[in-house]
Structure formats: structure tokens, C-alpha cells
Image (cartoon, rainbow, N blue to C red; front, side, top):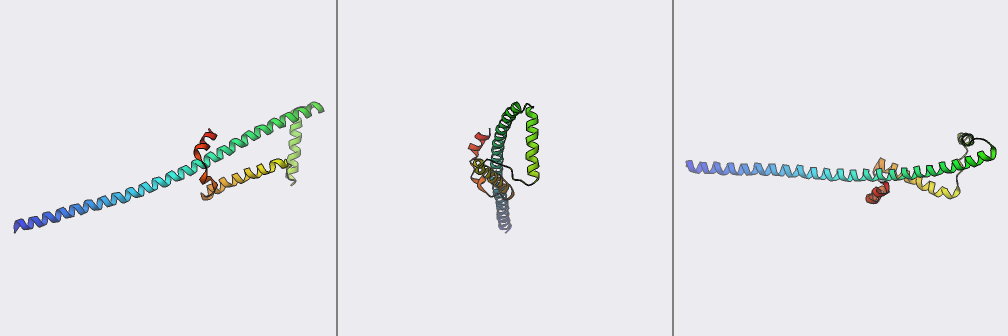
Length: 154
């Protein structure tokens, strides 16, 4: 009887031990699955953020390049007008800027080249895409190719 009781207790201990290890394994697998899902979500978020940053940097570079071009044009026109009027190029630029700023303050729309209007609208739409992506995580940036963008931004 003693050996039968020992056998039953040994069998119960083995079953209890195995079920305990099974519970630990199930808990570990569940936690690992949660961790893997969280890591994947972080990678997706990180990729989306990288895409948004690259897109923004690309647009910023375009803006700086356009500004350099406009400043060079402004300098050239100021020098030509200054030669004709016999004044300094800086005084021509400051006079023209003051005139344009005053017109803008009075509510007059800034005069722009009609041929550039579509490009300006496209740039404003791109800025709105970035804003929408940052606020909601939705938009055309999700399809943005990051490898090409990195090459362009570098």
C-alpha cells in the first residue's frame, strides 16, 4: 500500500510539475507574441516617421534651392536697377521689399507668375499631406519609397 501511495503521489507530482511547466511555457509564449507584435508595430511607426522626415527634408531642400535662385535673381535685378538709377543695390532691395510688405499688409494679394501658380499649389498640397500624415498617420506618405528618398535627401 505504501508503494502504491508513493506511486500515486509521484505520478501526481510529475503531472503537477508538467502542468506547471506547461503554464509557464504558455505564459512565455503569450508574452513573446505580444513583444513581437509590439516590436513590429514600432518598426512600422519608425518607418513611417522616417518617411515623413525624409519627405520633409526633401521639400525643405527644394525650398532652400528655390530661395537661393530667387535671391540671385533679386540681386541681379537690384544691381541692374541700381546702375540705371545711380543708387546702391541694397537701397533698391530695401525699397522694393518695403513696397511689397506694405501691399501685403493692406490685403493686396502678392503678385506671382501665373506659370508658377500650379507648382506653388503642388507645394502647398505636399505640405498639407505632411501635416495630415503627422496628425492622423494617413495620407500619401505611406506609399513613399524610403530608399529613393534617402538617396535624394543625402
